[in-house]
Structures are given as C-alpha cells and as structure tokens.
Image (cartoon, rainbow, N blue to C red):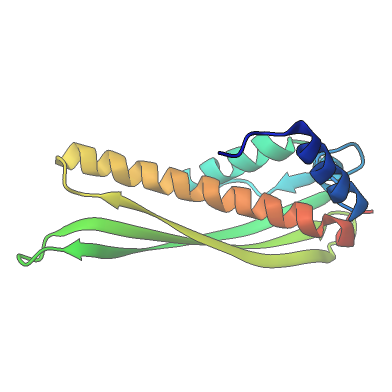
Length: 162
C-alpha cells in the first residue's frame, strides 16, 4: 500500500514551479486579472439567466467593465433508451455556446470561440419527476457550459488581457 509522503508532494510542487506553472487565481494570474473585467450580455430566457448568473458568480459583476461578453446558447435534445413500444426512457441534452469578448471602448473583437457539452436525464418516473429532471438537466448544462467558457477565457487571457 502506498502511503502519502509529504516530501514527494513538496518535490512535485517544486517541479511544477520550475516548469512555469502558475495558479490562474494567484495574484496577477489570468484568472485574477479577469475578475470584474467582463460585462456579460443581458439574459433573454431562463437558460441565459442561469448561464449569466454562473458567469457573474465566478467572475464578478461590474457595470463599467472594459470588456463585453456576447454569447449565443443553443441546445438540442436526442432520445436514448427507446423501448420496443417506442417509449423514450432517457434523453441526451447537448448544448453549445458561441462567444465573443469585445473591447467596449473600440468594439474590437479580442477573442471568440465555442464551447460545448452534454448532460442526460431519465423519464422513467412520473410526469412531474420527468419535468423536474428536464429542468435540472438544462440548469446543469448551462453551468457546465459557463464553467468551460470561464476556463477558456482564463487559459487564453494572457493573449488578450493587458
């Protein structure tokens, strides 16, 4: 059985520091520089609201931010686990977010891209349980997409942040 050894952990952390590893949310890191710098487009529906809430929760909210974030969420749903009597027992929910970071002063597009993911839900319960599972799946999906977008912005932030 392998036991935890602090010396190995410290050696591993030293190796990470030597290779240029820098925590994203360390003071001066790209995650720290991104906090409060994006004004996210206003939500249009429930999905957008959950998406924007997650972004603002992780990155902060600033009405006078120097950069804007425009996004477009699209989702599709596919039936899985179809029984012989053509009853769908599981749905796969796929989502995609196309985004652009814009400099508010000039309107220049600094970076853009797309993130995508999926989640699923079951329909084997009652109608009320199925509807609740569907709403929960949509909420989970937009949180996953928002987290992926934040990760992408943090990773690429050194290219477009001052």
